[in-house]
Length: 186
Image (tube, rainbow, N blue to C red):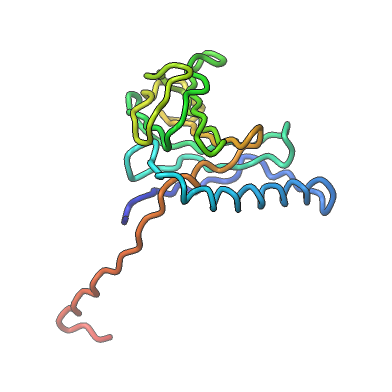
């Protein structure tokens, strides 16, 4: 749909060069394989947005070159404090509570992936079953963004993935060509 996602361009947080071959290649191949599996698994997920459209990405997923290096292990979606957050797919609440002074919610999805939301006030409890689209938390203050935002993450085991792969794709639509204005030459 038009206006489905608002894009804000920002420079990357880090620009660590990855060495040719070796561990960097293995990491890239692993990421490629997981991305392919996610694409296939996406068809099985109902694809609900954590926030209403249009999503406004304040900061993109920027995976680190190694597990302990600097990077951004999720996406930041701009939203007002108090915004209702929805489960992107059915699953079971893995964790709901504070981490380092911020409220965190983690939902284990049926396909083995896990989504994370912070900073939030969870509305569900650990072990509770949730359905796709269910309101599971409310956005609170305390994000690492300049303004209020949801830090939304996706994990496969211990590997962080781009959570935007879970967002339903917009359906392309063709719009009619407007009639030419009088006196305008093509």
